[in-house]
Length: 384
Ligand SMILES: Cc1ncc(COP(=O)(O)O)c(C=O)c1O
Image (cartoon, rainbow, N blue to C red; front, side, top):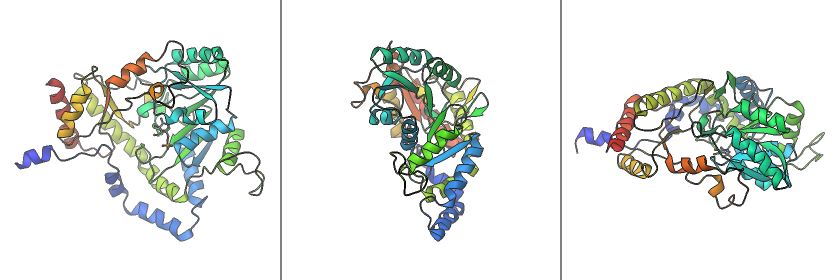
């Protein structure tokens, strides 16, 4: 095997958390060491500092750190008192955690379709979902749009449906913190926004973490109480039923350092996405952000004619290039969710997308020569 051939099959990471760790180096070590010195592992000063940094970053009045993206969704739904007899409209083409807390609280997710260009909740299907809920004898209470793969949903259209029907909006921005919509950052665009700091997310920690954003003071106060076992006037009082939903101090310390370089990383992700799109637009359907939104590219996902992606994945794998499919089983096909109602008109776009999509390696540290190797391999596989 000559040098050239060996280089061509060197395994490429799908997401390179190691490269980011190298870049951050002693900044993270020092931040964690500070926590190990003061030993306030729960509710330490880094949590409050990170919440202030987060709120300033996205322009929300309140940023509330919590234990995961799932807990962020749960905290908001609990604070709103969502439960049995209530319906919450969720897109089908998402990670199933979007609807999980709705179901856990005894409410009913109404599963709506997405738009083919953005993979995000289709406002028309969402509106039909409101009628579907009523027909099932349920009270429509909320909409959970998802900013899938890092791209904001059509928030103006969804907020308009919500205000027409008196619904709450909880934006599931687990994959999209840092993205913008019509000049504003996610977190400040809807009644409440939830995000995740799972390590693979654009802003990830070194374990589990999440946050809720809201401008509503009363909602923020309820969420902070629920996050702490429903704490009332002080620790001895349980004013309401709550959970242990706090963000660890060590994770907050890590995230403070990561947030400092996040804007540069978002710019790098956009450069990577633009290079992919320029190079692949003639062989695949490449993602488009539209004029009024920017993505943080949690995934770079192309679409191929049904039946083509397995061969592409196998060819790339043989060359050390990983791919992933989000989502082969959309929500309505998951065993735990398939009995929940579909919005009138069904979810044909989600069905189709689940047979067409394939995601390529994407992260802020993808160097051009490595990306060129991926691009060349994709082009040659699709030409063959
Ligand atoms: C769309 C979406 N919602 C919610 C979550 C849940 O986040 P976490 O894993 O931090 O609980 C995820 C995580 O993958 C997600 O992708």
